[in-house]
Image (tube, rainbow, N blue to C red; front, side, top):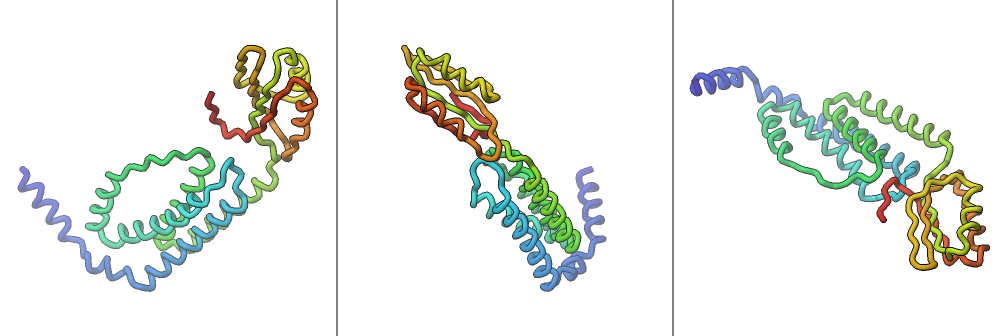
Amino acid sequence: MVSEFFATVSSVLSGFDFTAQLADLTVGTIIATLLTATVCGAIVYLVYRFFYRGVVYSENFNILLVLTTVVTSFIIMTISANIVLSLGMVGALSIVRFRAAVKDPLDIGFLFWGIAAGITAGARLYWVALLGTVVIAVIYVLLTIFKKEKKSYLLIVRYDAAEEMNVYGLLGNIRYKLKNKTQTGERIELTVEVKIKNNDASYVSRFNEIKGVESVTLLEYSGEYMN
């Protein structure tokens, strides 16, 4: 039975003309594919660079987006040119494990954007890759421009227990969500989540007017909080 299986596989593979498949992959095709992928990756890079709205911008991740686009394009180009190489490449990629944590969900969207552009360019659909990349870029830029700027922050206030009524009196003027409250003796550390529009944090200085307040800290909140 095993011999019959290998005989069947051999007969199927013999029907493919691998030289003809490789002949379709010319130097001009390779250059056009990689150039298209590079242009698409550059567009993704510029959009991520100038319109990023996450907590911490990472230049290394942005460069990774360009590399992902180009690498994906020549992987698809290789797979489409030779079935034997495609089987070996699929086997090699199946053992690769990526464990880098993506902190911002929006970064995943950019990563898929680069991969999609690379796949389309590698499939030699150059105009589809370029047009799709431009359309996605325009949509993202418009959403970013017209989106109301309202970010989450952690407000950390350290104060004397005797001033608790005054602290909560100021907090009553804003919308907040309690995250943590620690009391050590007569000292209290209060951590709340607040929303700020257009980076207006002028009310923070009002806490300093309370005599029992030791310090006030405002941190941008990415959704992860550790006690």
